[in-house]
Length: 287
Image (cartoon, rainbow, N blue to C red; front, side, top):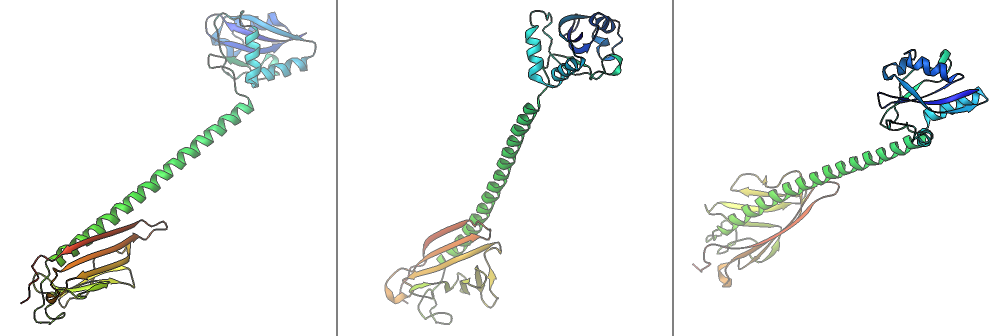
């Protein structure tokens, strides 16, 4: 006869699965320390065994118990009343008698080994978790970039709008007509254009305009060339100056409404629309 047996350490929470054609001799060898993988867990006691007429059947059963988690769980469940220490299962390399058997296996608390299906399921779950984590991380980075781009856009647009508003508010009337129409505060003095000309607080010629070629707001003071007020990373789609009461003969206090649409130069651009109205600081009386 050939046997597949289950041993339990009487001192440690360990069990061992093996096969043999002589149960008494094999148990004695384990307790005499002749088996390397079980030597440190002796003494051992026999808990359960299965008998087979065929050696091949015994070895296949041993192999199944050592490689399939559900099989060893079922085997241990059958012997649950015989097991004293409640030991679980863990692997330790060795070979059964005469060096011809399967790798020996001792088992500890951690539970039986994993089947191929269990490993595949675990790997699938791990892959799904990792892909989800990477997707969340990528989405977080993308959203952070969008937030930073919007903040840069907002800061630049607010600065330009505030600067133009403050300068236009302090504009002076051109009484001699050397730069714009005589007796007027702005050009255009009525209607809407993408530029505005005036004399600033220092009575210096000044102009704001939209450069349609590169989508930037530019400024010119005196004889100096035009300089950009907006960043190269941004594009101004629209700039309009709506002027009312631009001359002293119309009986209206000068008022300018600035309308601006500005965006980032990204594949998915952030777009910002701004509008403000400014009244000239000086009273518009006829001189």
